Image 1 (tube, one colour):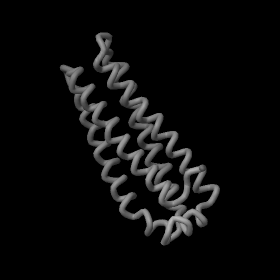
Image 2: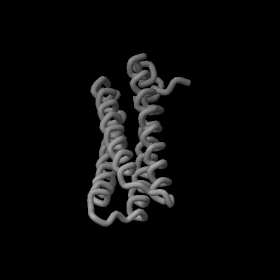
Image 3: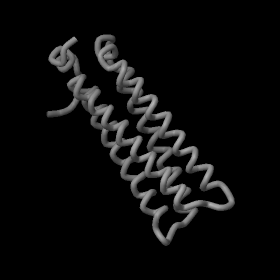
Image 4: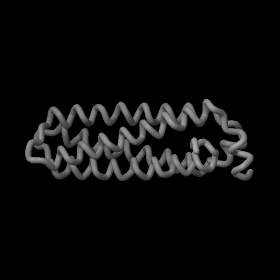
Length: 147
């Protein structure tokens, strides 16, 4: 199916869900970037890092729920058109989860390694950027972006 046909099938609700997902992804990436900076700083606080980690986890859950709602609302033709992208996004989501689990292990241990926390946060942010890029390509494919 070509893009023009997919664009004509896109509903206002789908476009709104897409915008909500994209905003949540941007906020999550910003939080991961802030966590990286904090972990690299001289005033690193474990309690603050744990709080940021928890917030990242919640934002990632929200991001995934929003994306799933959007996907559930697609018709069969739309789903078929973005099948590979949704699979790639799920793989990226799993990798982000793994990064956050690594951060949690580090922050829960007795000897917290700031460089390790910073690196995991940086890698999580990088994966989130890839996720968001893939999501935006999906939006282009489906004609969900408000031009």
